[in-house]
Image 1 (cartoon, rainbow, N blue to C red):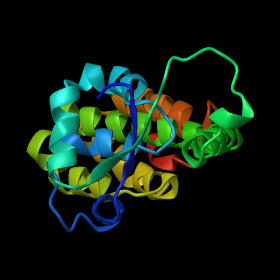
Image 2 (cartoon, rainbow, N blue to C red):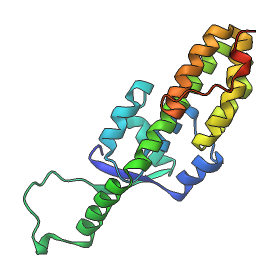
Image 3 (cartoon, rainbow, N blue to C red):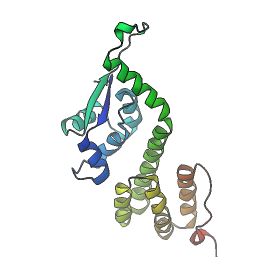
Image 4 (cartoon, one colour):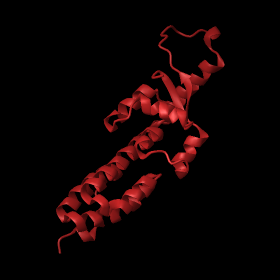
Length: 192
């Protein structure tokens, strides 16, 4: 199973967009990362720190949210014209798409990092008071959704933990959202 490439089914894409099928939150990061391009072994390495593994992948298969689309091979012999089947041509096209979609993979990685940042810091700094923010972070589907959540998040952190902690978290969040570019529009964080 670990040598296969998986992709989201229509049901899986619908779950990402609408949460209609009520996938447990712990499985969502794995579903988000499955893109039909990367071998599952590489994706599992990325989500292992979250406690996700091959068993969780099987859960997504059983829920019909993902499906295997190809098994990778380790054959290193050069391909001949006789070896090129529709499946081989499809694999080569997939490889080409992966190379051209590298920015898309980076966006998925960035989305995942920001998603984890919000979930971890809201829970640890706000507890139950951050429940509504937690829901908004869970519903975020784009980087813009996270950008829109930035100010209410920072205001809640400042109110609960103070300016210094809010500034530190703002700097970490800006590093993720804007790749280090600081936003100085947070007048509520400046000393009075």
